[in-house]
Every structure is written in C-alpha cells, then in structure tokens.
Image (cartoon, rainbow, N blue to C red; front, top):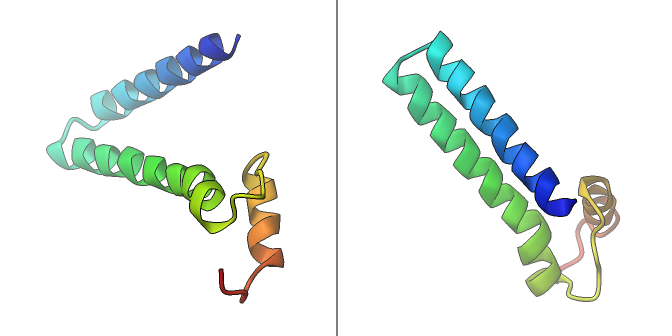
Length: 79
C-alpha cells in the first residue's frame, strides 16, 4: 500500500505540473516549477534525514507537526 501511495503522489504531482505548464506555457513557468520542486525536496530531506541523523539521532519525528514542536521546544539550544 505504501508503494501505491507513493505512486499516486507521483501521478498527482505530474498531472498538476502538466496542467500548470499547459495553462501557462512559458519557459519561466517551467523553470520556477522545477526550482520549487527541488527546493521543497531539499527542505523535506533536511527536515527528516539531516535532523534525525546529525542534529539529534535519539529523536524520531513522526511528521511535520512533530518536527515543528521539536524545533520550538529546543529553540536556542546549541547542538
């Protein structure tokens, strides 16, 4: 089921991207879409891989809400 869920996310993203580019077929739109996907992918990687592996290996985040609570709670502490 997890593979199906991942596949559906990919299909949804592909459909949304195609619709966006068809509605506004400009190079700028395509480049901004690529940058947006890349930037959010890197932020996701940082949020769940870098924080768990390098900043606090003992803490396991269960989602973005858990991550936000952790950051707010540990604000100002040096790691």
